[in-house]
Image (tube, rainbow, N blue to C red):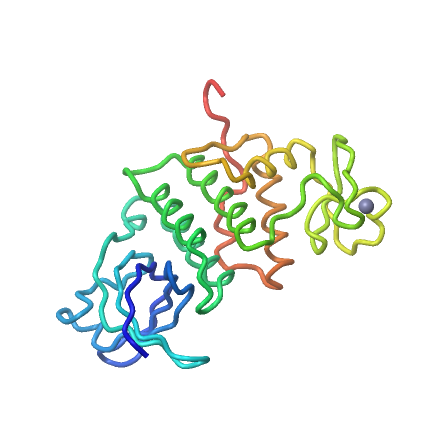
Length: 259
Ligand SMILES: [Zn+2]
């Protein structure tokens, strides 16, 4: 197969031999890729030490079929992730994004919108020096909502996942983890796992899922904790496992002054 160019985010690197790396990438044009980068551990050569976690690179790749590793022949650094130099929370947030992209995207299944979302989220985490904790926490929640929507897993915030009827707005509503969203009283008993969620959290979730919300944004501090917990449980149900970095996400945020 011919060599092709794209831009990519480094999601994981594994030392393969004394001189080579196996890298997991999210590329804009070809989706996730697992590629061998021969000579990448040498300081000089076609990779110039560019293949660090969460670095954004212009890459040249030869894609292979099925289970074979792709071959990375060139990588030019566009942007290095600096979160580790700023604060522990910024570092953890970056790790979380890398893990979620690995778990949620598939090999050679491109989602340019997800790629662009990841770049925008990493910029929110990384730009400037130390970021307020609330900004990062809001960015993570927004990333989670948007990636769910883009990959067709957006939880329903208005119609019942059981019968498709509009669920009446009450102070607390039932949220089905497997069905994926709010359920009406009639359908509730048929769901195995439901959470009781405040209507305010459902409203905030609906806002975060919409297509016209952009960075920078803030999240209502009074519902953040509940919504974070709902999102964590929803991902666990969807993936059948708990993402490792999930427990490093903030469980609460402070109210902004004057908010
Ligand atoms: Zn129903």
